[in-house]
Image (tube, rainbow, N blue to C red; front, side, top):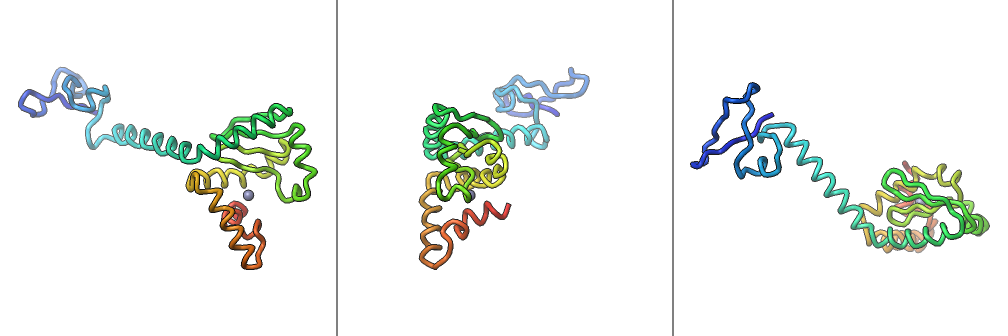
Length: 182
Ligand SMILES: [Zn+2]
């Protein structure tokens, strides 16, 4: 790897003092300001850029899904107050069990649903059921990251379209089909 030292007329001045013939970073060149040892064809610089672009993209995904994540956090807080347990993993907050989980397990449609995802928060009936549908719920997390605040309106819009066409509003929902196909 190397860096550039620029003379006053802008030419690159190669330092010979370094045994490995690296260039010394002493100018106002961006790589030197950031104290990065690089050259344009350097894989280290590409890695630096890709790493920070990746961080920015991931931050955008969290912000884009944040309204639904906040709704999930509020539901999670209530569940925790009723004895639910919390687990953090793969960039999500997983909450399961407690009295709310017990009540949810008695609902008429509880045999079809083992968890619900709101943004980056996954709420499960209990830890065993949450583990069994974890892969499915993570697809929903990716869908929230892709569609952000639009996800819930699009989800219910898809269910309404399926219902109007005489199909199952849950199983034929395009987002559920994608999640069930994983
Ligand atoms: Zn689902």
